Amino acid sequence: MRQRGRSAARAVIADYPVTLTGPGEISASTRDARAGDEIRLTWKSANGNDVVASGSWSGVKAGTGSETVPLSRPGSMVFRQTATNPHGHTETSVRVKVREPAVSTEPSVSSAEVRVGDKVRLT
Image (cartoon, rainbow, N blue to C red; front, side, top):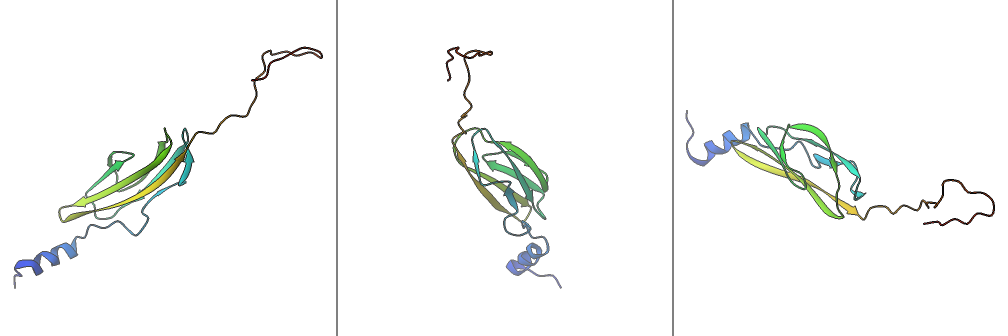
């Protein structure tokens, strides 16, 4: 017996759901980093024919994978993953706080060789 109308459509969607396999299926190696650092993003999706990255990264991605992403400037970066198939789409994301780059506290000396009694300039 053939089903008609909405209930038939729901049955098809139930057979081929678009899901990301659980909460937090895109993750970052850290959620608090400094500009100039790199983080590792890891993601996983199921039943999505197309997985597209957007926000602070972009491109078509494999259903499961990882990627190293450089953090170029301070601020809040959001990495989104959207999985789609003929029946719909779903999105998940992770936010990373990027702080100012670390300041070097290594002093430099005006001369490579210093003898007792020499004057030097530290910067």
